[in-house]
Image (cartoon, rainbow, N blue to C red):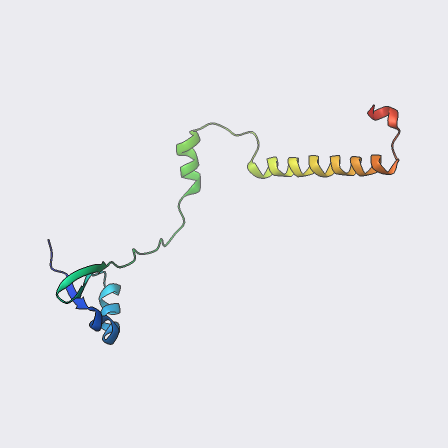
Length: 103
């Protein structure tokens, strides 16, 4: 096991810039209180610099299967269907349609 720099609770309060600098360099730190290890401070892993290749992920999942409609088209159809039915229901409630057509 490699050597980790140990800090006391007092050091964390009084010398935090030093602790922060070590964390930015990627070092893992040990925290001690009365000579007993009470924890470790581990640096945050670096953030992704670029987005994953979603097209490649989609190919891994679905292969070369051709999808007939995109998700956006499916949502648009559902919204159109909902709004068309909603308009017909309101018109029917107002008595603008003949009741024999819907019986």
